[in-house]
Length: 336
Image 1 (spheres, rainbow, N blue to C red):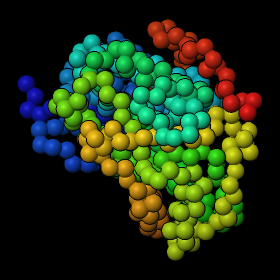
Image 2 (image 1 turned 90 degrees about the horizontal axis):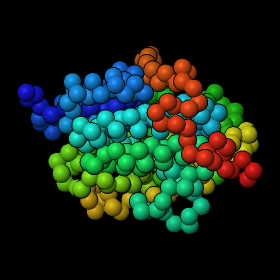
Image 3 (image 1 turned 120 degrees about the vertical axis):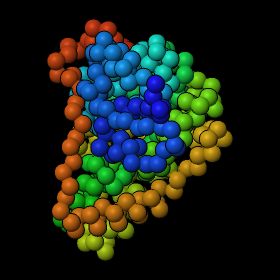
Image 4 (image 1 turned 180 degrees about the vertical axis):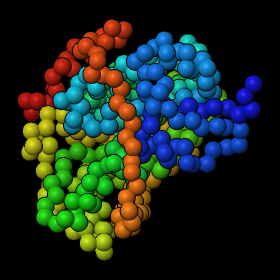
């Protein structure tokens, strides 16, 4: 018999999993992180054996294809990471009665609503990435009785590879940095998101909410990438990072999978159920910029990326999950 309850984090994401593993958890809980390949995603028989042997009290799924732009050009990988693997994980966890906390994003929405999206709004994604995520959410709801889905905005942090680090690096070289300025959302600091995942996961496992909960959590106030980039570079000026920012739309570079226009999330339900306050992304961004710039003065640590799921050996149709629903093959915004 185990002395402590195992919380299994699915995905060795360079940003999220490291923060989740390093943060403090209540006594009596053990946290373990496994990559999709180690766990056996897309090989349901192996996945079933592994979950049976591990017997976790909770699974937190953070695996997902993190680049919406690239996702449009790598649709099989997008399906594998956000749809098929989630479906397999949900099927096994549901059959074994393991609570599942699944991380999703605001990209399941089209972005044409005038106000913030509620949890009760139906997903209507218009990109391959968003529709794959919506299909993953549907798989979780179909197979699990005890589950929670946490949707968030675009993330930034001081660890791993992310757009904030890339932008600051470009800033030190001077010249121009082109930043999208047509997507309004809630920039979300990774550390605060991980704290929210911990709180919701423990609440789900301890029966504080009914299974089948969908929550929204992101930073405030809403902003575009360009606005957040301008704020970050103002803070980075003492560290000699001051390029010229050029606002663009994703179509400037022919990107068909551009983020939706306005994907603000209403986070009042998460506050009511779990007392989760929306973080002010500006303060968190200031801290991240300082941490990144100071760490650049010391030798860089080697970051080992998570092994990709074996999607290259797969045919466009998964033998168990099938293809994405009709209409996802082409981005609905292509003619915009």
